[in-house]
Length: 254
Image 1 (spheres, rainbow, N blue to C red):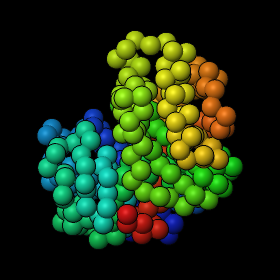
Image 2 (tube, helix red, strand yellow; image 1 turned 45 degrees about the vertical axis):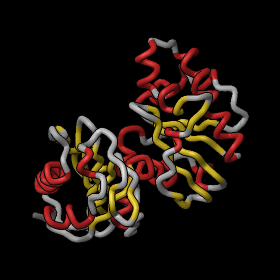
Image 3 (cartoon, rainbow, N blue to C red; image 1 turned 30 degrees about the vertical axis):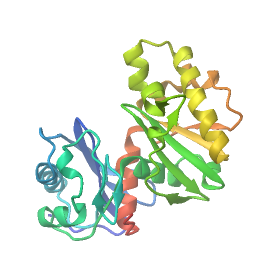
């Protein structure tokens, strides 16, 4: 094992199909070495996922701060929900769990969308560091992270807001686009309905849109009619890992 260099941390992003991690240079947001990917265990129970994270840390030859982004609402380091992982996560103290499996107690656990948003605010478009910014990831669902002048308000879960009789993510996630066979223009109309409702309720300074479908943002963002500026995320699939590493280094424990 190598000792951690100052200004670095291991970030881990737990997803339904893969657990991804890398050592991150916190001054630049860049990876130090290669990303490591491990298939998410089936079932994705707390101990099985913790063992996979420990394996990832060993492969990275890392001893030092570790940040973990989970698809869960995290409060007091306890998982309150479980999306795309085993329901046994609900009620699990993630910090205690990971402390039993990792070679460090310098561990921070946070929601995956919050982690991605932290990275985007730190290393993305400079304009989103001021005002009320709503970061949204479009994928299997809609993840959200809310920032006021760059400070995170954690665990917003706006994808579950009821809009027009259905949850926002059930009608406007990228998975909904695929499920319904929608064109980008038709799907953008659904996204626009969601954004306009968020705009009406929260009056954000800007929306930041991420997730895999943001890589083809030119095919749908121009069709949005919301008056709030829409900024395309820059970090793409690195964001969750970078944000998790940042949370560990900053001892952020929602």
